[in-house]
Length: 276
Length: 332
Image (cartoon, rainbow over all chains, first blue to last red):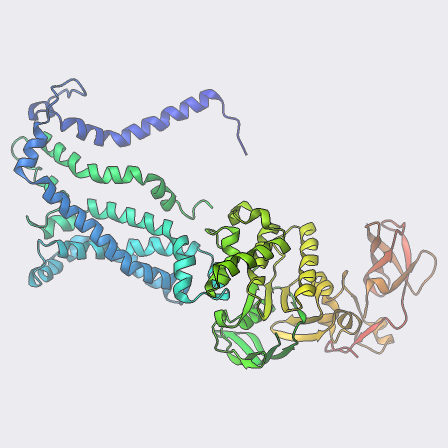
């Protein structure tokens, strides 16, 4: 049912909407602008918003000081790799829990989530020691594994909720129609589950891309992803404000582009089930 | 061929026994309706036959072959679900063709069979639509189309009309009955609606709490219900049950009289009562009468009967139409 909305009311809420939107976006905009300033202008007070000498020297300096593409490649390998690995584990397990639940299913789900309630730093030492002994420190493989493990509970939860939404009747209908388990999965379940899997994948890539605690602690140079690349510019001494901004802009750019292109899928995925 | 035989079939979910051991024979080509109140186990029984649930005990035979441990895909049965259970990502054509595709039929054969089914079910113009673009009745026809193309040994219907509105329900009821006459294939139909059961069935199986209360043709059940449950469940409006002195007079713990077997008069009769609610349907009049010494009685008169709330009427049950039951509810 349409409610009558007066133009004034509409203008008011539009204004509020834009204000909140811009407030949320402002830090990113500010980082972006700062990355084009000189170090001096970056910390100038009062700051200048747009009227400064635009320069790209931060970007070239950042690239020459620390190889952006090497870090970016590490980020890609770790985030995509851990997502694929995670999905390979999570799809069958979420499947089993959604379609053949037992009395313990809820407990298992809760238990998995509970691992996310522990502060990561609580297990840093044992994991660091294991990584050291297994020669996984500062390797892409090691970071991929740890990223898979920390995000696995979230992937399983998301997929579980998506799979739950697929009506059991339809799968039973496929069975009655003579479909074997393999055909049931290929022809009926997969097409219905793809949107859910896709948005889980996107979210997980973003989470893994931005994860900083483990990547900073378990990598040094070889396998360091973009998070470590940014962190190397946050220094207690010297003027690195503009370079830090340039590094951050470079680090978030790929994921921002990915998010932009997939926003419809992402929003649909994240609100799936909430609105039928 | 499509005879189905259940031997000592039982089903429990954990501690809860849904169906204690039961036997049932369904002949080839019969239209059998499982009817009973919600939770009586009728859908579970159907799902056991389909193979969607495993039996806890007993055997199921189709055409004399044991299928107790055969997966649903191999039982050659087709099922129509209450929710239609269409594949949302496939067109109507894709939905109807799906079982044929699974059976590995030739593309030409599939096209022909889908075309034929669509013609029978008036779906030809909708073949390229997705299920979400169809009305409830059309969706149900697609589900039926999907079932008939594979030429199964038997059709299983799980409350297929419950999601449709009343007018459409009557139409689809006729369509399914016609389909049964055309195909002459065994059909098992689950419903809680006794009108559907009475109008469609060759044989009705009345279930209550997982037990079979009575099996018989619609009129057999109507005329000779074996117990109070069947007597009360079959027939609309419900049979009147009368206890106490009136029943004692007939040498029974309870007597039952159907509303249509009570003669009404404004001047004289056996029981005197006051009209509570009068429902005038035009073709019939249903009167809810509070009767002295007998209790509340519903009576049905053909055509119009001009009485109103508070009027006095006299009721006389027809001779030979009084059902007698003992203290355990069994018919005498």
